[in-house]
Every structure is written in structure tokens, then in C-alpha cells.
Amino acid sequence: MKIIQFETKDIIGSSIEDIKRRAKILIFNLSNNKSMLIHLKMTGQLIWEKSSKKKRVSGGHPNFEMVGNLPTKSTRAIFYFDDKSVLYFNDQRKFGYMKLYDTEKIKKREIKEIKDIGVDPFSKKFNVEYLIRQVKRFPKRNIKQFLTDQEIIAGIGNIYSNEGLFYARILPTRIISNILKSEWQKIKDGVIKALKLGLKYGGTSDNTFVNAEGDMGEAQNHLMVYRRDGEPCKKCKSIIKRVVLGGRGTFFCPKCQE
DNA sequence: CTATCTGTTCTGAC
DNA sequence: TGTCAGAACAGATA
Image 1 (cartoon, rainbow, N blue to C red):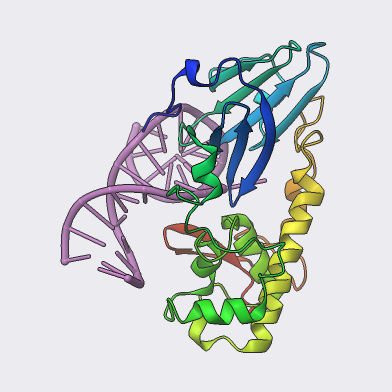
Image 2 (cartoon, rainbow, N blue to C red):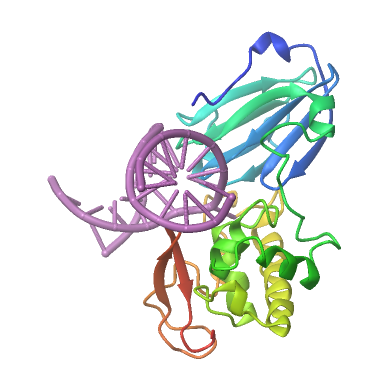
């Protein structure tokens, strides 16, 4: 699948009116009644460089390309603005995409990319009653895969599913139809806690993991289980385990979670 | 060197 | 329908 799925001429001369997000998809609403969808997938990043070349604002998956010279060999698109600022879209693995749709169609949710997206975890609709209602759709799923299903909850990825379940003290392998109401409350709280921590440490757009010297910041140091298999749990010192669910690495503390 | 892993999601087989 | 392996790709790590 091609990364850039529209013609340059379809956006040239238009300005960005506002930027929204649905799940993990960014929506740039343009002045020509079109909207550009950007998905960063596993390795995408956006870097906006002011005309002074001194100031950068970057977001997405951090790495050293954010601090070095631009463009890089991962740069897939470059936007040039009237004020001489430049936006780079980098994506090492080429999983990401940029598509153009009529803004009207997006607002009506007629686009396949967003029409079935579930509730945002920071919205009031993300509550215990909603979660229990969704269980009836896929009763025999495990909780880990349930949480990462974008049709149920918008925007939870592999890290936050793992981390959220640690905070909830629930094993990722638990079948959702067996989960008690009190546990759903803990899962909801745990997911929100994991997301907030992610935002605090790594989600701010102009102060990401990689600092001016190119050091990795402390963003990943707060992770409790993700990619910590074989290491001691930060709470109880038990060894963190790894299994595979839905083809994705799944990490948990066998003592803290049940 | 080989094997396996990776902040994602879509497709085709059953 | 639901579930699952495999695919798209470019590395990094053991």
C-alpha cells in the first residue's frame, strides 16, 4: 500500500484550518473542503521545523532522526508552508499512510477508517457500563486484545493495554465474560492511569524522549511491565513474564496481576 | 550467521 | 459472523 495516497496538486495552496484525532488517526482539516488523514502506525513521526531552523516541534514515535539533520532516509513527505516552516513526515517501516477525503464525508463518519471507532478513553462514555455492554459482542476474548480493539476503545495500543492491566492488577489472559464489575472499574482506572503517565513522560509534542543531546529521555523508565520480561517487578520483585496474545507481546507480573 | 522482536492494522482462510 | 495467521516493511537485538 502506498504511503501517500493523493496527488500533491490536491492540497497545494490550501491551509490547515484545524487538526483533530480519532483513535490513532490524525485529521488535518484543510481550507479546500478536504481533510488529510495521517496514520503513524508503528514508526511514524511528524517534525515541524520553524523557519529559524532552531525550533522543532515533534511527535509520534521518537528516535534520533528527530534531532539530526532533515530530511532523513525515512522521510516520506515534506510540506512547505508560506511562513517558511517545514513539516516532515518520517516513517521508517512505511506502514503509515496519508489519505485525502472530503471533510463532509469525515464529519458524517462515512469513511471506513473512522466509521467504526469506539469511545475515546478520556470521554465520559468510557465507563464500566459501556465496557460490560461491549463484552456481549465478543464474550470469549481475552482482556488484553479487547482493550486494543479500536472498535471498542479508541487509541489504546499495545503498551497502554499492558501497562493499564498492570495498574488494574488484572492478568491479560483473563476472558472478559468472567470479569467482575468491580474489576472493570479497576481496568478503566488502570487504562486511564497508564495513558496519563504516557502523556506526562512522552506525549508532550515539543519535549519528547529524545533531548537536544540525543539522549533517550526517561519516558520508558516509568513502564512497569512492557518489554520488562525477565526483569523484577518494580512492586513485588517477581520476574515479569511474556506471552503472545493476538500476535503481540504481552507482559505481566504473575504475582501482582490475577 | 539465524531467529525473533518491534507504540499497527488489514486481508484472506476457515 | 468471529478468530487467527500472515502480510505490509526496515531495522534492532540476542
